[in-house]
Image (cartoon, rainbow, N blue to C red; front, side, top):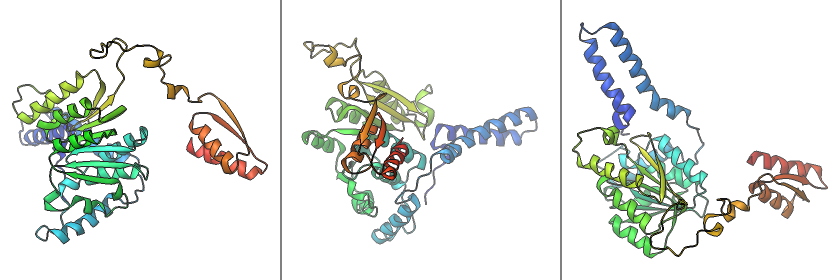
Length: 354
């Protein structure tokens, strides 16, 4: 297995520099003992953050654990590339915490169709695929097959591989094809080369590939903390700085950057604010139909939060289905049935769903 350096994250980079500072301090008798103690305390905090976040993330029994997938993928590569035995390639490796974050996003917005642009990481893709419903779909854009092999065949080792559709070729051409096919996505993940990421973001937004309230996740937007340092001349860092500025100034979205790995931007497509000027559509009537009554959309107003539903015959058949539907719509459900045990069983089901 290939392992990440601790300096892959801003916290890891801080820890790496603190380790060097500690080594210098320990080898210099002129450094006060108190300063050495403070260095050690700072190092303990920096080194402990990422492992603690990993440990505190919810452990889930995946149908295909990362280790199992890694072993199977190892066999796959051994069959196709004899010169690289017993190696799990970095392109298929992703931090567990990142995959769990992606799973959480997919679940929270109930995504069904997802677009992945750029460097594909095996664990994260499978984590996302497992969270999708059976008819969910992931479109994965890759500039070229990994190491000359068919990545789709690699993912087919998982039972969720059928949800993953590989699109191999120039990313710009793939995005143009998806636009022509009138595809729309609930989530778009971008982990592309830094210099083209801004172009991919702009294409997704300008061509409405992201649905209303959809989410874009962009990785590596902190570049190990280099984006907020001064006197940086690295072109990749400058490209990411430009990307962050473009996103931050885009009135169509709301965004935050999480200090996960080397930076994860969470971008939500949002409705135009009340004071927005719609340049090309000045004739739009901005009333309750446009903004929503009391700023609540029509579907939100159909929610049954705070209501009480009384379902007779709710212990079985259509009554049971109706009880579940009302509960999912936000109502408190009272279940009545001639067979008490059946009514109690449905109440238990509803309680388990929250």
